[in-house]
Structures are given as structure tokens and as C-alpha cells.
Image (tube, rainbow, N blue to C red; front, side, top):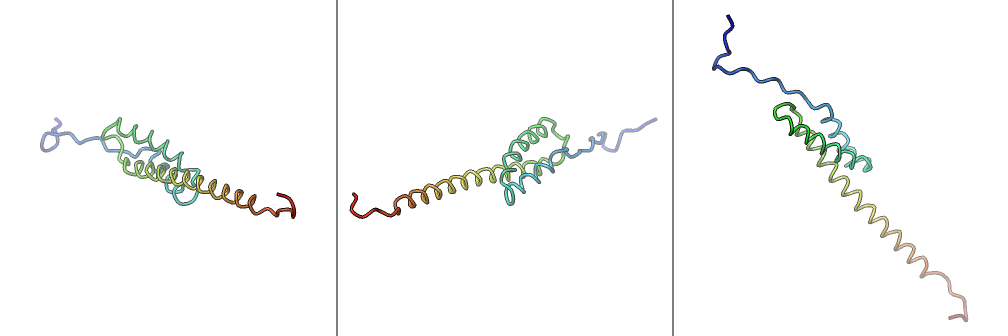
Length: 109
């Protein structure tokens, strides 16, 4: 005869890690500090992983890793866009300054 555990409650099933949670954190970290092209991938994959974890409450244990990677992906993507606009502005200013400093021919208006 089998007796239930003390307190009358069954033990919950052990949680497992989502297979892509750590990947999202790595992509987000690299996208933030080393290679900004990876940041949008971390953002997109992180959104999907967090939704999958939220859809199975108690099923996965690494939601915080996936969420941290997703946030790093967001910040890295925003920084990447800002840097692109800064580079474009600097390039435009250099082109504008270069054309205004062209030598003028004497006697011509």
C-alpha cells in the first residue's frame, strides 16, 4: 500500500531550463558589447522564448535569463540605430564641409 507524501500534497514536477534561454542571454550580451548586429536577433528570439516560458507556467526555470538577454538585445539594437544615425550625420557634415572648402578660381564669381 502506497501512502501520499506528508501533508497530503504530491511533489511538483521538476522544472527544466528552456533550451534557448542561455542562447538568448549570450546573443544579447554579445550584441550589447561586441557585435551589435546580433542584438536584434536576441530581441526577436528572446520575445519568442519568454512567450513560450509564460505559456507553460512552472515548466521552465530560466525565464530571467531569457528576459535579460531580450532586454540586452533591445538596448543593443537601439544603440546600433543611434550609432548609424551619428555616422550618417558625421559623413554628411564631412561632405558638406568638403564641398564648401573647394578652391575658387580667381576672377570667376
